[in-house]
Length: 85
Ligand SMILES: [Zn+2]
Image (cartoon, rainbow, N blue to C red; front, side, top):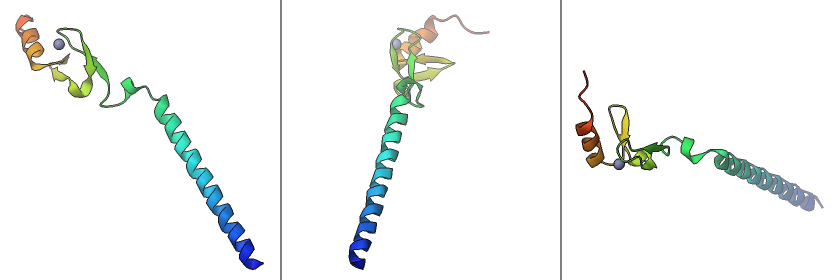
């Protein structure tokens, strides 16, 4: 009889632990889905100053406060821009 009670208690503990884990997992999923991917660090979308194409920040080049999609466009933009004082 005692063994049965112990088994029931273990089962209950496992059940509630599983339920808690499932809830934590679900909350984590909801939190992740709520975040706008464009607002996440490292996954922000930026626009090439030269050709206006949008690309992830990770793939973009940054030079003098401007974003560029490739070295070629950065060089072209800097060439065409009037020199700074
Ligand atoms: Zn470009």
